[in-house]
Image (cartoon, rainbow over all chains, first blue to last red; front, side, top):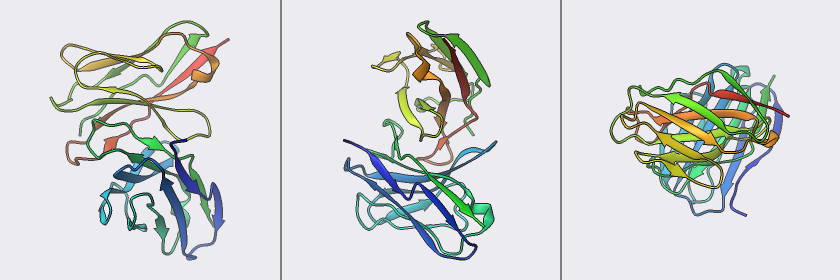
Length: 114
Length: 111
C-alpha cells in the first residue's frame, strides 16, 4: 500500500531532550515536507526537500532540523525541544515539488513537550 | 500571498450533493487549485486539483470559474464519512513549493 509512515504517533518529552520523528514513504516520491498544525493557525510548513540532499526552510523552521540522505526518509529533528513546539506534526510527500501533483500525508505525530 | 476564502462551516444532508465554494481572486495564471480534506484525528487527504478545466475523479468534481477567481468542490452524494474540514489551497507565489493552508470549511453531514 502506498503510504507515508510517521513514528511515533504520540510522544511526550521534557524540555531540552533531543528527539527525532521519523518519516518514510514507499512511493519513490522526490518531494517531502514537514508541517505542524496548531489550533487557530492551520498547517504551517517547517521544512521541505526537493530531492536527496536538497532541503529548504518553510514558514516556521526555527528549532527544527531535517536531513534527506535517502529518497524515502525525511526525519525531523528537535535538538532542544521547548514547550512551544508542542503540536501535531505531519509529514507529506509528492511525486515532484511542482504544484501539479497532490501530496500524500502521514497520520501525524502528536508531540507534547513539558 | 495568494489567499483563499471559504465559509467556516456548511451543513448538508446525507446522500445529497454538496457544493463547497472557494474564492481566490488573487490567483495567478499558473497557480493550480488544490483541495484537501482532513477527517477528525487524521492527516490531510488529497481530494482533487486543477488548473483551468473542470476536473473529475472518484472522490469529487472540481468546477473552476472561467476567470479562475473562484472554484467549487462538488461531492456528488455525501455520506457520513465525508464529514471533515475541506481546504481549498493555492501555491505561495513567494515560494515555489509551498501550499498555503487556510482555515478550511467544516462540513457537517446530517443523517
